[in-house]
Amino acid sequence: MELDKMDENDWKYHGEGNKSLVVSHVQHPRVLRLLKYPAEDSENPPQTAEQAYRQIQNIVDFSSNVMSSLLGEKFIHSGEVVKLPLEFVRQLSIKVQHQRPAWRCDKVMDIYSGCALCLPNLTSPALHQPTHTPPLCIEIKPKCGFLPSPKHVSKDIKTKVCRYCMHQHYKVANGKWKRRSFYCPLDLFSGNRQRMHFAIKHLIEEPQNNFKVFKGGQCIYSSKEGSDESPDMNSLLHHLRPYFLHANNRMNCHVTCKAVLNDFIQVLVNALLSSGGGDGGVVADRQAEGRSFCEASIFNKERIRHGSRGLPTDSVLFRILQTQMLDTLDIEGLYPLYRQVEQHLQDFPKERTRLQIEGPYNEAFLEKLQKCPAEDDGSVEYAVAKVHQYRVAMTAKDCSIMVALVPSSEEEEDNESLSSQRQLRDFRPPAFSYSASILDLDPKPFDSIPRQLRLDQKIVTCYLRTGGALPKGPVREKEDCTLLFHPM
Image (cartoon, rainbow, N blue to C red; front, top):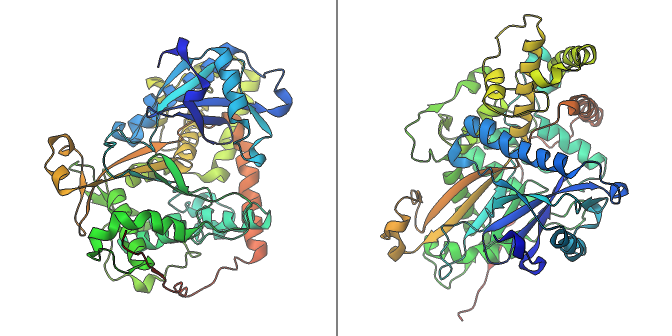
């Protein structure tokens, strides 16, 4: 990018979260992430350009020095901070405003600092050849994949029903979503193909913010928050069908929705379970702890035909789960340690720097959380290390996985340029070259912990009040449909 020749017409609105807005380049596989402020601060930015630069640099450092070490370098794209011309940023803000969802417009794009985070566009993978079939990219936000230890929680229900399943009741009760999702993260993280297939199927049926499909860089399937409408499953299947015709050997014939969907899910399960060429084994230690089954999951355990060995240790799901499990105390067990640190900082404000409360996120920060003593020795160092572990675990619980799938023709399979790409061909043709990446790896603020405790209490109270009214027993399969296509 030539920063002095930036043109807002080369960029388009890509999406946004709570803290930043993303635009993508129309030709090159690049995105820019720009900070957002509350709308009331639009004419009086809450931080200086130097502070904005430091905030974005902290995101880069946290990703490259901390999360990369824990999750694996091969999955991480940390990006770099760039300083953009202010006029370009202002014009870009005007251009994208009409494309933003109304419910996101309580915040405005930072047009004062000129700082942004430049990243690869993971919806347009580099292994894509423009003359071939467009790549598919699937974004999954898996959420927390284990139950907390009973040692640190006040309500027994938390050791039986996972946070995600309880949170569904709270979100529906508060009108954020019209329908509950029957996806359960513990099924996805189980390593059992049947449970994983079941989990992804329910993510597709009710994606909420946790499942999106991109084709050639364009989002073709997602949910709109607060919408009464279900996402258009039939439209998704129309997009997917050409990728799986060869797999079903039914060229220009009737292809059932179920066959297309099953093949698609099977490819995704294969990608998520792949060890990525490493020589790691598998682990299933959570089964012994009883922390990998959620009582709210509607998956019938009796349907499991083959026992699970667990997740391959080099798979993207295993690395995320291990990092999530740095949260050994649950928010309830952590909060007293947070209060201890907070009190210490009130008494000794200059200690914030030594204890790296707001960074820098470097090797010393990583060492602090990795070398935390097993037992509480009463020291502020122990309390800080547990708080840092919790913050890192929260980032892993809120991250997203981007799986890029590129169909390989028979000619391509012999191409040396694709030989280094792992092939998904162990179920039936066609083969896919694929890559997995982990994104949304921002550090969670130290002072967000009290809010996390309040939210946890609200979620548990709501779930107990509604009686956890999830259906028990098997769920009736949706009636099969048939997609009929006429020869061109």
